Structure formats: C-alpha cells, structure tokens
Image 1 (cartoon, helix red, strand yellow):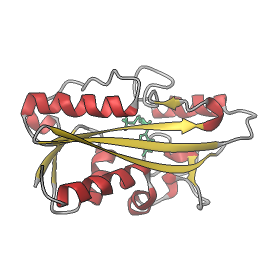
Image 2: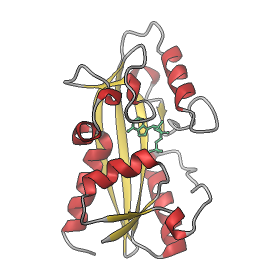
Image 3: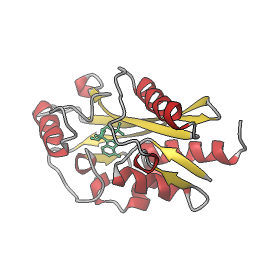
Length: 193
Ligand code: IMP
C-alpha cells in the first residue's frame, strides 16, 4: 500500500519506514509535487498534525498522515513543546536548539523530560489520531552522533545512553515516534474505513 507522509526529513522517513515494514511504501510531499513548507500554525501537537495531514489531503486526495513532535521538559513548564523545531531560531537549527536548552537548564536539578508524538491519519478523508510518549531526562552535554534534533541530550528512562547513541532499531523500539507509528500500522492493517 502507498501512503503519503507529510515530511521531507530523511531521518524521520527512515524511522517511520522501518516501523511500517515492506508492506507500505511511503510517498513524500515532494513525490506529489508539493515543494513548499507545509504550514503548522496551531498551538498544540494535535492541531499541527491534523493541519498538516489536511493540507496534503486537500491537495492530493491521497490517504496520508502527518506527525508533530515536541520535547516537553518538566522544569521548563513543558517547553519547548510545540515550539521544539523553532526553539532558538526561526529555522530547524538543531545545534542552536540544543545549546539553548542546555542554557535554560543550567543549575537545574530536575532534568525530567519526555518526547511526545501525535500522528494524524486521514483515510478516505476520515481522521484518526495516535499518541506516543517516551519519558526520560536531559543530560548536561551532548553525546552520540545518531538520530537528529535533541537526541544527543535525551536519555530515556531505564537506559544509560542517549537516543543519539542508539541504533535506529533500538531507538524505534522505545521511542515516542515508534510507539505512535505502531498504532498507525495496527490501524492500517485492521482494514480501511
Ligand atoms: P517535528 O514536529 O516532528 O518536526 O519535530 C519538531 C522538533 O522536535 C524537531 O525539529 C526536532 O528538533 C525535535 N524532534 C522531533 N522528533 C525528534 C526525535 O525523535 N529526536 C530528537 N528530536 C526530535
């Protein structure tokens, strides 16, 4: 089955394709001639995921899904949350985002944080949402080269290494996105509409 996924982020594509397996072929917005940045102007992950999925469905009529993820840090009142991509700058500057996060947590003992992913799926125009959460903590310097975004600063509960030190399979097996995508797969496999 072909399904359109609202991302051009190669890391995310690989993570999601690995969980979906061979039975599904992911299409990207670019594959469908959509080259502009897809708007995400809502103030919740749920709203943004839904907005992105509807944007694609309105233009292509294809079954599609979109995800939105936030890093929610307890001591920062849940920030950066829905603003995770543009925490430090207007762009998706992972290094500057991580630097700002570390600055804002300087001297803070409570390092609890979680990643939360919301996926909005549109099947025949009907919307379904799935949520995946992984709890963990923010360490005080970056470790590891795998993954992307805040991965080098995040150690999931029950582990002594960051997401950026894990293989893609290891990260997928416990991550926010892996958990949400497994629910998506279950929905897709349970039959349509
Ligand atoms: P998005 O909504 O999925 O694009 O995620 C927003 C921001 O959250 C990204 O720009 C990354 O900084 C961060 N992010 C999302 N997923 C992950 C992840 O799996 N690991 C680390 N950071 C992530």
